Amino acid sequence: MPKTPLRPSPPPLEANDVAIVGGGTVLWFVAFLALLPFKSTLEAHDHGTWPWICLSGGLLGLIGLWYCRSRRDAIRRARAAEAETAEGPATRLD
Image 1 (cartoon, helix red, strand yellow):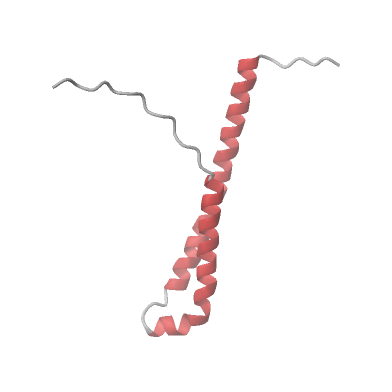
Image 2 (tube, rainbow, N blue to C red):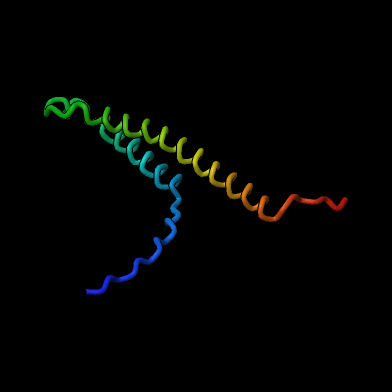
C-alpha cells in the first residue's frame, strides 16, 4: 500500500491567553465570594476546604496572568525586533 506524503504542520493558532486566564481567575474569585456565606454549612458537611481551594485558584490565576502578560509582551518585542531587522535600520529625514 502506498504511503501518503506528509504535509507540513500548520502554524500554531494564536489565542488571547491574557483574556482566557483573566476570565478564569475572575471565576475563581467569584466562586470564593459565593461560598463564603455558606462556610459553616460546608464545614458541617466536610467540605470546608472549598472556599480556600477557590481562593488558591484565584491567587494562582494572578500568577498565570502575570506570566501570560510577560510572555505576550516578549513575543511583541521579538516580532518588532525581527521586523526592524528585516527592514534595515530606520533612517530619519529631519
